[in-house]
Each structure stands twice: as C-alpha cells, then as structure tokens.
Amino acid sequence: MSIELGLLGAHLRAHEVSPEKAVEVERAGYGTVWLDASPPADLALAERLLEATSGLVVGTSVVNVWTAEAGAVAASYHRIVARYPDRFLLGVGIGHREVHAEYASPYATLASYVDELTAAGVPSGRVVLAALGPRMLRLARDRTAGSVPCMVTPEHTRQAREILGVDKLLLPGHFAVMEPDATRARELARSAPAATGLQVTNYASNLRRLGFTDHDLAGSGSDRLIDALVLYGAPATVAAGIVAHLDAGADHVGIYPLGDDPIDTLRRVAEAVGAVRAPRRAPRSASGQA
Image 1 (cartoon, rainbow, N blue to C red):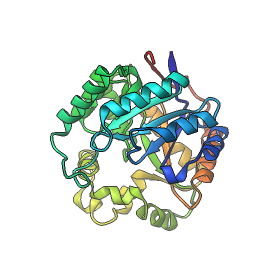
Image 2 (cartoon, one colour):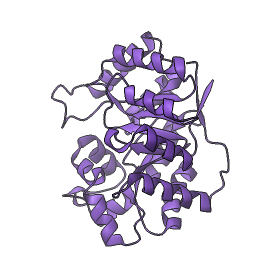
Image 3 (cartoon, rainbow, N blue to C red):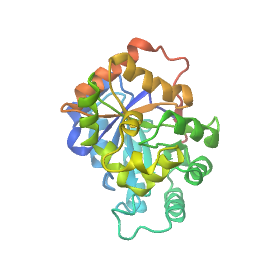
C-alpha cells in the first residue's frame, strides 16, 4: 500500500486543529495534516482527525524522541494503521538542546530510536525524519522513507534532494501569510515560530549553512531572513514560493499558516497554488506495508 500525501500539507498545532477543522482543511484541497509541536505518544488526536475525514492523511511533525517513548509510539502506530492503513505517516525528530535537559548525541539517539521503532514492527517506509543537516539527511535516506524538514528554503530543498536521491520523500514546510503589506507581514512573522526558532541551535546552524549570517539571525531576524522563511504578498507571489520548493525537488510542501485565522490562511494558500499550477507529476507517495 502507499500513502497519497497530496501536493500540499497543513502544519497545525493541537490548539489549532480539531476534527471539524480537519474536515475544512481536507475540503480546501490539502492532502495531509501535520501535527506539530511534539504530539504525545498516544497519538490520540491523529486518530480523531482520521476518523472525521474521508481521505486526509495525518502525519506527525514531529514525534519528539525525548518526550515520546518509542515502544508507546509504535503501539499507537499499529493501533492507528489497523483502522486507517494508508492514511498515517510517522514523523520523528530529535528535539532541541535548548528545551530538553537530557539532550545529547543527537545522531546516535535518533538512530537508536529508529532501531526501536523497527524492532517494534513499524515499517521504515512509513517513517520520516525531521532532518536538516547532511548527516541527518543521510540517516533519513538510509533508514526511513525520507525527510520532513521545517524552517528551510528552496535552496535547502535542492541540497536535500541531492543527498536523499530521487527515491526518497522530501516534504519541506514553509511559513505563509496572505498579507500584501511587507511591514505587516514581517510583524506577524516575527511574533511567530519563524522568529523564535532563530534562537534554536539546530535551525540556526542550518540557516548558517545556507549563507545567512549572525546579523540575519540576531534578535527576531533580518528582513532578508524573514523574507526567505515566510511567504507573503499577492496570492501569485505566495504560490510562486511554494512552487519554488517543488521545482527544487520537493514531493509535497507543508504550509505553516500565520495570522489570526490559520484555516482561512490555508484555504487562501491552496486557492493561490491552484490558480497558478497544474501538477506536472503526481505527488510522491509513501510506500511500505502497514
């Protein structure tokens, strides 16, 4: 079996999504809802969203190895796919040293976590990693279905595709707000995770690899950096930023909606993309037995 992720995904935190809102997201044309901000190991919200929708895929972006024990996550995975065998994708990540006192040996820890999931019967083709740097991307390539990175640019997508190769999933996320005024859009961005994440070592290191400087990363970010991480402007401009990821090698782009009404932002983004792009190829699906 394969999981059809669709061209667009919606990144939402628990307080932003409900079964009713998931129905709206599906109707807006999204193939996947990504549950952000370290969902708990029981994955109960994922199951409720799947129950409420007809074909929507739910993914985790991402289960945090420090807060969700691998055996419990594997048990939740098997419970969910028994009911929804082709609609759930398990995204896993290492978290951040700024948050977790026990943070250590990120590569070895994440690799060990993947080992535990595999031993518990979770297929590698149903797991993706929140991989940013080259070494983590190679782990995603060698041990899982691919990568679900965030706070990245199309240039990162291009580089990641070179590392992952043609057969692995690449599912970047990008912030977006349907705001035509640059000053207002940047204000919204600087009050959102797009700015707070700049103080996180994993994200900052990756942005430096992409050519951003200490000046760009200082405070809540330079205009140059905010403009690279947050899509805004006319609908066609927002759509062009999403298409840039697809042209750089992404199989699917997840949208982190900014603004007072995340669901409305998602709806307007989907309309913008639909107005400018007919898919040149079918979006890649996740394969592997449930």
